[in-house]
Picture 1 (cartoon, one colour):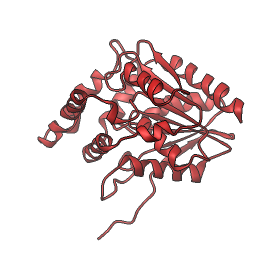
Picture 2 (tube, rainbow, N blue to C red):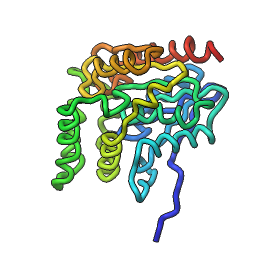
Picture 3 (tube, one colour):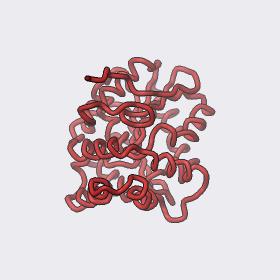
Picture 4 (cartoon, rainbow, N blue to C red):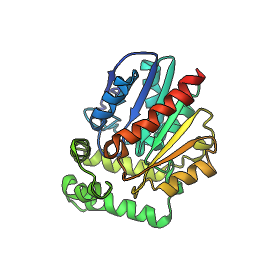
Length: 268
């Protein structure tokens, strides 16, 4: 029997006419944005954070995942919950998805923030692609548990010395990811060429990299700016790895909130 489609779960926090949509990565769910949501709401913003299909309590579609479909589904979330000004902040896989959301609803997305990703897997070298898959998927296909497989990989994604309750939260939420969903997400990421969508972004954009990130490497994100999105701002956050919003929370949000005020809200 075919299961009826159910829209992914999401959380709405705060109020106002400027909404930030948070898209999490392939590890985790909206729950690791708990502190980020609180900071944005305290800054006077409205926040919508989803559990992408297959994450949290959201069911995994029977035919798997694709970045294009994630983009369209997130665009439908903007149709449901959007306000006068909508900003999409995508982290990691969410950062790959964010330009696809804009491509689906260019009239409803007024700013993009791309965190800790190259934006398109086609930007990665062949060696990086093989390492990416070998570290993440091959042990699961060999029958190892997700927590045993993912723990060392997740730890390696933080900068040396990163610690504290925000880091602990990210790690625990990331380790709770469903293995089938994770494999579907990694496959979707490696099959997606996001360069056309990146080139077509016409709204203000901010690229945020962590100094020690081995996934969304700073040099890779900088190349997205120089080669694909010359109008975008770029910032590298010192002493941060893949999860700068948790590792260097204040610095991350100094960049983010200034961008929202000066590059998005000031133009509305």
